Image 1 (cartoon, rainbow, N blue to C red):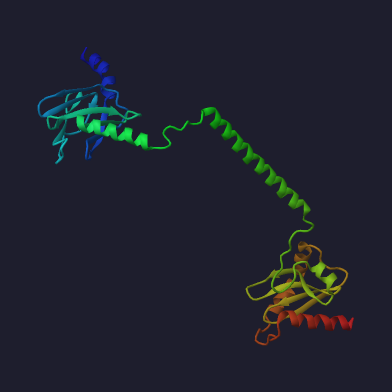
Image 2 (image 1 turned 180 degrees about the vertical axis):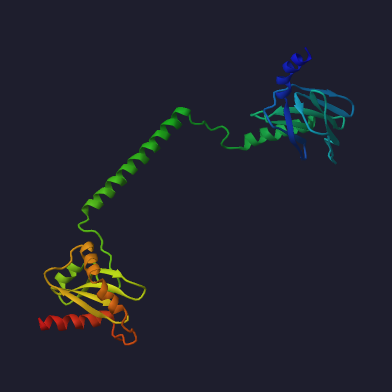
Length: 294
């Protein structure tokens, strides 16, 4: 039977809100005590007034331990928060002319206890009314909700139209471009066939592959000929192509595989006697001499 009653009382015990913290704000015309709960506080607030104390009873509210705070204020001398059975008791020591105003926040997670006098309340109301009279915008009519919604839809429509126009302009600019941009290195031009057609005496790279950190095999185009060159400590002309030029990177890789042993032998040569000329000038001279001999 006792267990049955305990089970009935369990939901009420679980529904009690715990007091997490309290803060005191001492103002010139009042003192505010802000109490924060872990869940929305839905309990009943009761108060009783004596000559020197205001006793507040917060039903269905709990606090871990008693709290006491003393103040040097004209509205609040001391406040004590004590846990009781089923409720929390707050005792405020105040002057005789002080009154209490209790109000919860919109989400019920907070409770404000305001200690003030009637004179301070009337003074605050007078100040608020004076501010409303001085404010030149207080009497201006406000826009209706329908007007605000209409303005909102107009702005959204303008933004959507602007985005569509930008996409259309970008697409038109892309289609109007005649040729893509071509990147070029600092030494050779990127498009070997185009450069060879414009300037037959210009050396350009068709393919290139690094063998190690110091040597690489390059397929150079000079005029109507293509030259397979080992570039490194010693610049060595490996072969010349006129009709059977490699067209793809795969063709170039096949040539290198067929000359694997030959390349290994060249790489074993001593690198101390390498040419002091620049690679571009050196291959221009070699390519020119071969062209003249043919």
